[in-house]
Length: 461
Image (tube, rainbow, N blue to C red):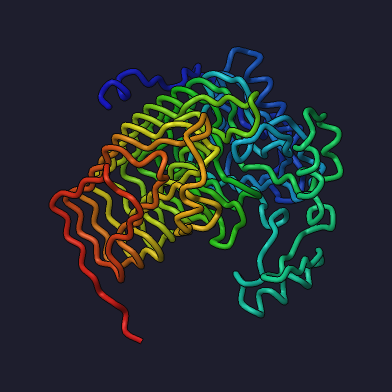
C-alpha cells in the first residue's frame, strides 16, 4: 500500500477563483441557478481552470456538468439544493448496477475529465425524496399516511405496498426491462421511463485525478456517490447521508476504479455504505475493468446494509484492497462479500484489519456466493451442485481478516461458497465476536481460523 500512496496523484488546479454570484446566482432557495452556476464552471474551464466558489446561501439548481481542471468549492453555510423537477435531468448513456443503460443525468455529472475536485464544508442535497419509491413496511403508520397524502401512486403486491412518486415511475421498470432485452436501444426509447431512471447524486465516469474533500452529500435519488472507471481518486473527510429506508441508497460505489484513497469519512445510508464493484456480466459485449489498488481507512458507518462490501457486481474482478481502522455501528452486515454464478470475476488479495463493530443485525462477517438479493440464502445439495465451472464462475482467494471486534451480531461468520469454486486461502485471525450464533459454513476447506474468540450470547425472550 505504500506504493499506492506514493503513486496516487491529486488534481492540479490553478490559482484562480470566481464566485457563482458573479455570474448571477441568487441564494434565496427559490431562484433556479442552473445557468448561472454552469456558466461559472464553463468560464473557469475555458480560461484554463480554477476554483468556482459557492458562498453561504440556499442555491436551487438543476443538473450541473463538471469540467476538467475545475474545483467546485462549497463554503460552510452553502446548501446546494437540487431541483425536484425531473425535466432538469436529461437522459444520458450510463452504467448502473453493473449494466450499460440509460439514466437521468446526475445532479453532479462528470465524464472523461481530468483534474476535478469538489471541496469545502457545504452541503449538496439531491432531493431524493422526490424520486425514490418507499415501502410501507419501512415507515410508521403516520409516516405512511402523510406520504400518501402528498400524491403519487400506490403499488400493491402480495408482500408489500410501495409508494411511487408518479405512475410513470411505477411502470418504468417494465419498460426498461423490455429495452434491455433488445440487442440495442436508443436513449429516446427510455423517455417513457424517465421518472423511474433515478440518478445518482454524483456520477464521475472515466475521470483521472479526482478529489472529494469536505462536503456533505445527502438525500440522493439512488446511489449517492458513483465513480465508474476512475483512476487516481482521493476522497477524504466527506459525509454521506441517505434515509435508512432509501431504496438503492448506497453511500459510495467505487466501480472499476483504480488507485483510490478513501479516508476519514462518515456514512449513514439506506443500502450498502462503502461498496466495491466492477460490473455485471450479462452479454458477451459487456467486459468490465477491475477495481484495484485501494486503501480505505478511518471511516465510520452508522447505518447501511453492509459496512464494507465487495460485490455483488464483480465481473471485472476486485484486487489489492486494504481496509483498516474502520467502525461500523448498527449495519445489517459488517464485512460483506457477495457474488453469484454467472457474474464471473476474481476477488483476490484483500487485507481487512482493525475493524470495530457493534449491534450488527445479521452477520458480522459474510462470504455469500449464492447472493440473489437476500443475505444468508441456503440451497439443497441438488441446487448447490447443478452447475459446472465456466467463464461466469466467480472466484474468491487470498483474503485476510484480522483484529476484527464485534460486540453484538446475529451470526458471527457466514461462509456459503460454491461447490465448483470454493474459497481459497481465506484467513480469519485474532477476532473477538459476540453473537447469538457462531460460524455457519457450507464448504470451507480453504478457510483457516487462527486465535479467534467467538462468544455466544443468546438473547432472552
